[in-house]
Every structure is written in structure tokens, then in C-alpha cells.
Length: 410
Image (cartoon, rainbow, N blue to C red; front, top):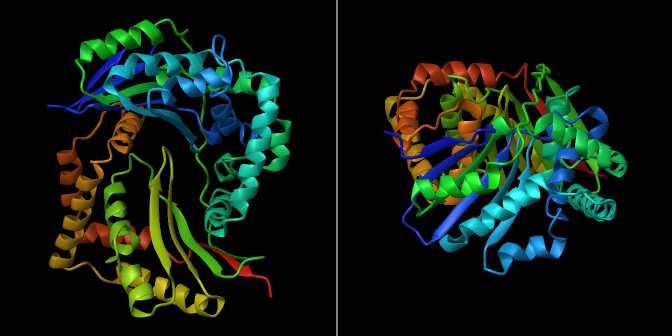
């Protein structure tokens, strides 16, 4: 028995609904189009389009778009990833139709006027400059450039000053035509409604959207082997990322790596890396690991920032923890505790309803199904110590690890 409902419009757009007894609704519209779908000379285009969706449409000015939801206290925002473009809003229940109307208008009737393109070009160039001024953020992008070297996945989602300066109306038109496939769009609602009402409103506003059956072929990035990279920057601390390509979203080892990642450097103060490097040795204020699964690959990384004289020791301790996981199976109690902790954190995260409905929409887009919370827990509980040992030896293999250091200029 699923706790959600799905309806597909004749044009292919799917409506996802999850009921919640609340006065607040969270909804999102996800398009399966991101920065990896750009041509080489168009780097930053998916993000550029996302910005411009909030500008003029055929029937609304920029101010009318921005005020449409804000005037009723709703929150409207958007973001772009390597694989998706997402618009989302949180609102009082009575404003659902107003929200759907706005979503349809900005997604399918934006006019992308040239004067707005110039304004947003300046905004994005400032965003790029601001990003580069934050080494803990910039190092992640530079790391992914090394991880996916020679592939569009390695390019910065924001683009570069040079590519952003050249983006134009023809680029926008071609990208939307080639990537905004209506069968790869999900409109998702998490709120207190009858499903029939959500479907009726969706049919009213999205039903007349023209069918777009554009097919794109995403090329899987090759695995780039071991490399050690050092760059000097005008910064005060050393920043470091160590990582590797990892499992895609549908891989059977995904939940095992998620469990390992949480044990190693995930949420909370009791992760192995935090206990060893911050609590025991006191040599890094921030240390964390992350695993992001994508449609055909994944990213595993460990990040820390510390004083330059402590960086070598911190890196050595990171590798020590990785070696433990490669060499030693988790004991029965260790494995049980790791699962209990991870399952508890996932359950608490369900309280963030916006994150939950976005996650559900992505799952429906990627797999055509959505696991229940219990199914997720069952997949975690079936992971064995032998599987974790095998995963550790594959993903934490020193011969495949890429290291990137930002060091202060002397």
C-alpha cells in the first residue's frame, strides 16, 4: 500500500500527491534537465534559465511574478543541479490554485527578454565571484572538475564568466526544446486536499501544455584515476577534499555506501571522523563526508579545513579511518548501532516536508516508483558487514582516490 498517488496528464506531465493534515502545503515542479545537459559552450545555461523564469512572462511582469505568492505570505524559490531544475513553494492551503497558475506561467510562458538577460547575467557573475570567495564551497566544484575531467558533469553549475557572458536567446530556446520533455516533468504536492482537486487544478493549468517528446542521451563519465592536486590561494587555512566516483542511484550497493558515509562523517558529532580528528586531536573545526548518487554515477568525498601546519596530520588520520573500514569488518554491535543511528536520522528528516516531497518527486522521475519509509529501513537493515567491507575496498581504494588541497599563499 503506497502513501502517495500519481496521475499522468495526456501530455506526459505527472502529478504526485501525498496527503498531510496541515494548514501548510509544500509543492515543487521538477524538470529532468540540468547542467550536464548543456553543450560545452553553454556552461551555466540551465542555471541561467532558472533565474530568468522569475522574470517576465507573456502575461506577467517581474514584479507581478515575485508578488504573486509573496503577497499571501508564501515562499517561492528554485535551484539547479547537474541533473534537475526545481521550482518549489510553501504556502497556506487556500493558495494552491494561485501557485499552480504561477508555476505554469513561468515554466511555459516566460519570454526571456534581453534586458532581463543582461540583468541576470550581472547577478550570476556576482554569484560566481561570491562563490569563489568561499574556499569551502569553491573546492567542491574544483574537486568535481577533477573527478569528471573531460565531461560536462565536471563543469560548474553556475558557469564561468566567459560562458555566462555569451549565453543568448537562441541558446535558451534550443536548451528548452531539447531538454524540457513533458514526460520527464513532475508536479508534486504535499498538503491537505482531496486528490481529485489536485488533479482537477493540474488539468486546468498544465493540461494544455504542448507535448515535448525530446530525447536526450546522457553519456556516463569515465572514471579518472588517482591524482594529488595542490593549489595556492589567498586564504588563511588549508582546505582539503579526498574522494572518488561512487555508485549511481539504482545501484544495489547504494544503501551500503550511504550507511558507511553516515558512520564515517555524516550527521551528528559521533561520526568516526569527527571523533578522531576534531574531538580527539582538535585539528579541524569542520570535517565531514558526503555521498551523492546521480543517475549513472555518484560522488563520495571527505572535506576538512584546518591550519596549514595541521593539514598533513589531518589527512593522515582520514586515511587511517578509511583503512580501518577496508581492513576490518564491523562487529555485530557496531553494525547494529550504525543502522539504528542512520534510520533514526532518516525518520527525523521526514519532518522536513519540502525536502521529502522533492525527494519523492526525484525518485518518481528516476525510477517510476517511490520507496516507503519502511522499505528504505528494510534496505538498510539487510546490509551486511561483508557487503560494507567489499564496498569500502572498492570506493575507498587509495589507487582511485583524488585529493585536492587549497593552501594559503606564503
